[in-house]
Image (spheres, rainbow, N blue to C red):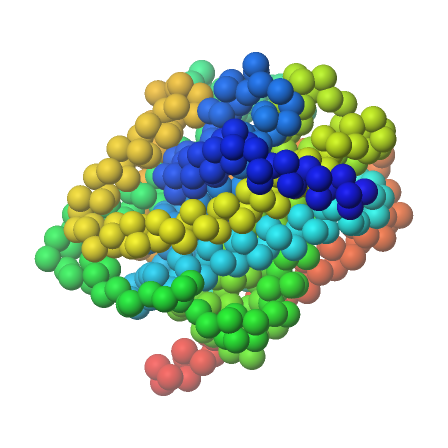
Length: 502
């Protein structure tokens, strides 16, 4: 099969039409991913109509190139503006933006680009060689396992929210409550819409995320017009990617571990890049000799987040190609495009459409290289955003957030969600409650609720069936241990503060 892959790759890098399309759509994906309010899904939805009259291989060049570019592009606004361009880039803000505030914006973005490439590369190699094996493991996961993974991820949110466990729990619960607005996904019954039919479709994550992250930054600038700390002007002279090869390779275990976490979480349907980046980030923090440096501009936190969320791309493709089950909503868009072109994914696809399957592997690999070269080539342009007055930059950001909130489903209610969510986010930030924890709680709520209801339905309302699922029990035990560890650290921190104040 290696010969099929290499012949496909050779055709892609020697045919001008393929080269032009992939370069254009990788660049477009990077741009859309970097713009707040334009998610990875929206990027692919915008590109999808262009592929209807294309040949299948050409259509995959367009969609997968855009996918790879958008997934990486989210790191730019996350680091430069503290506003994640995509949900998968939320954990990137934890250490990426503090690095920018220290005058290391170029290094942060450069390392983010490099580690995005490496994470994608590792996941695509895994995709090619161990897709059947990993797909078999994924088949052992049912609703109880996904429910347990969701709870485990919630416990990780509490850990990342700081030493105050109460605030971490409140943030996660608030996010989950916001996700319960709208129609019940199982019974199709409207709930918590406060009598407003505009909320029957629920609160859109794009509008909420833009509001929670963008509006507080704008309000902060408006209140501190003369505060120079709001301007990030000190830029270092950047060479290469801002990090030596020796320094980067010295973190090989963090890179490899985060890539494996991202690829494996990616193949679990519906879990997504945000959970993968959070899990990789917390794993890096817990295994670090200096966990207290995380959140202050620690490069290992940035590497963990960006490696994992890009490794999700290859992971999400594994169940899509091997089983016909998309590992993410973005993979579902790619699957729908293949279906429109008459390609049926699943075990037989490797026999009936061998050339196309290995062409997809080659497209992902080559698009990953294009992403590396394009993002590094225009890196200085990204850095100019930081030298512009922040008040001017934020006007443009607010405009894009308004457009992104509305265009997600052409509903003015989402614009109000954006504004109200922004004001709420500002006051929560002032109270020391982490906004990222709220958004992650929202994202994970669907995984927990849907799979819990499905599991109870399958077991006919008998929760004791959980005891027969060892994988689910293992994740629940990990969730309890994670929460207990967070509680222990919180109590220890409280005692330390009390001792200092005495």
